[in-house]
View 1 (spheres, helix red, strand yellow):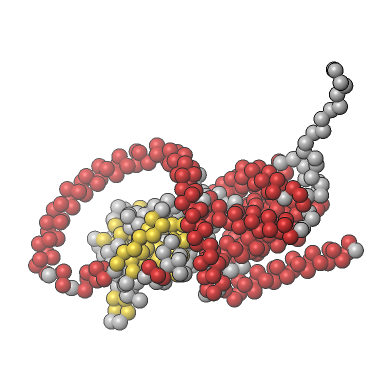
View 2 (cartoon, one colour; view 1 turned 180 degrees about the vertical axis):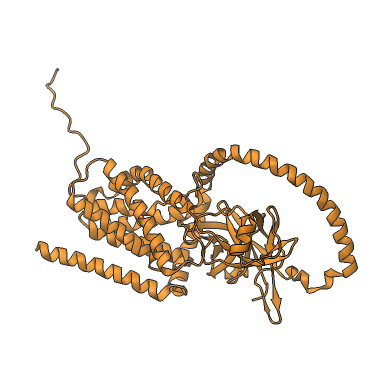
Length: 282
Length: 182
């Protein structure tokens, strides 16, 4: 009797392990869209309600966390403020020059402003992946809102990621910090191009890889989306969306591995609302 | 554990509540830049009360539910959490589990094991990005949070499944007989 019970238990375990491997083999890279769409459709209203109900509790926990961070943040912000003041003065001059040059070159009519083709829809974050290996969010926008796979997702600070899958009432956002994420970007002003990739497990550090090591990239420079276009092909991202600023750019690393480190502008760990840019090139 | 249809319904409700809480609350809050992971601890508690088969089935189902809601590759969370459930169930079947410290320590250890399991599977499947050493800190902090979360989870799950527990000691102390007039 006992042996029979043990055999049955082992059979259940073996069956579950085999089922896991089969699911993994069948759905890895493609996903089981039917099943997942169904479950996601059923539970996204529940998640939405839970998200709203738990918001005060989340804010309370965040308040504790932010209090710990505030002390260190304060001194860093003071230093940044001094730099920002200097940049603001320089920026005013640059704006004047820019306006004159725009008028001169009539950039308004050129395809460089293709970003205006995008329309923004705002959504609420209703769930988040528990593991840093899959860095994703669920938002309460679906295909009925015009959201499509690969649409860029932004916050008030800059690029957040892109839509990885869409259901009727919810969509998944693959964050910049997901290991499968790679976005073409460039450093301004030098215009050095590369691919923004994450460093898994560190949400405050992105890597701008495959850059031209002959051009100098310095700390504090801004990284934006490259937004390339080649004949009928075009990037999913409009050009010039802010991604982050260069935090580490050692000449040795640039020469040896053709990469610099970038801190994203968007606070990817604390997102309540995001905007999806719909209607771009697909 | 005596599994009646009503108890199965309760387990399903606990699992669903746990997953919704994880995705809508715990994954979105951070303490020291790390968000707690409730699910391995929940699976450990279910396995400690139900045994290895119940633990494995619950782990598999909870993992599948999470993967479905996150629209990722199915099977990764199922595989890791079924391992967690099975291991916790084996501990329960081979040793006497008394008090709350053992479940809490098991939750801590098996959460760390689950994080390592996720890491191994993802590395085996291929990651086209460098891995930060900060993940070690994340793993350790997640297991510490699991230790702290284990107390309310274990008490809550045990209370919810009390009618099915065979060895549950009687909690209400019998009133001592008194002599009339004393």
